[in-house]
Amino acid sequence: MTRNLFVTPLYEATLDADDLLEELAYSIRVLAEDDQAGRNWSRDEGYKGYTSYASLNDLPQRDPAFADLKRLLTRHARAFAKELAWDVKPKLDSIWVNMMKAGAHHAAHIHPHSILSGTLYIEVPGKAGAIRFEDPRHTQMMAAPVRREAPEHLQTWVAVDPRPGMLLMWESFVRHEVLPHRGRGERLSISFNFS
Image 1 (cartoon, one colour):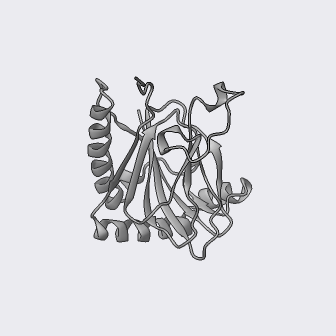
Image 2 (tube, rainbow, N blue to C red):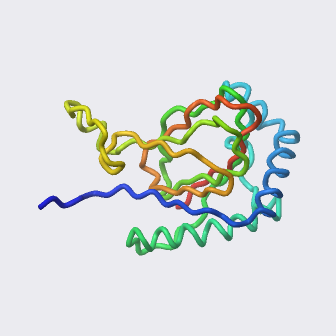
Image 3 (cartoon, rainbow, N blue to C red):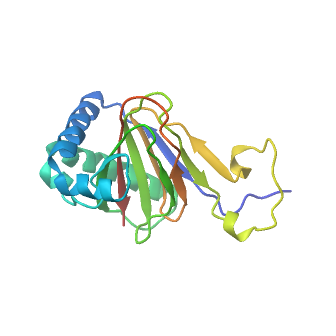
């Protein structure tokens, strides 16, 4: 008998909220125009596009669409926490927007000081680059043999192709990266952390 231990869950939902997604897309573009500090940070860090990650920490107070999104994300985070058997009600800690242009990517990273992290995809052109998750045991298994044609739960890396309205959440210790955006147009997303 084989038992699966230490599962790494990935929460996925599709938001049926076209009006909200349109409002958020508009808001992201306005922020990209108006947020000089965010544009400067993006330029200085070599980010191809714009992010409010290091410049704005009040989006739900600043924009009613983000206030609506905060309520929606909180419901999903609490449902996910229940699936994880956590005795906690996650609270939104931070939220930021991302506008990736062709060639943009995010190197592998984790989100310290949080319990849940996630991304909501707003607009996703073709070849926009998948988000890829790493098996958290990978760094501990230096002599691990290569797996061929392994089922998803045994793969070292799992890539998820985003689509508009897709919401993904994971435990914040899970290392992830965004593969290069090789399409045309802008890929719009909103990332967040819960504590």
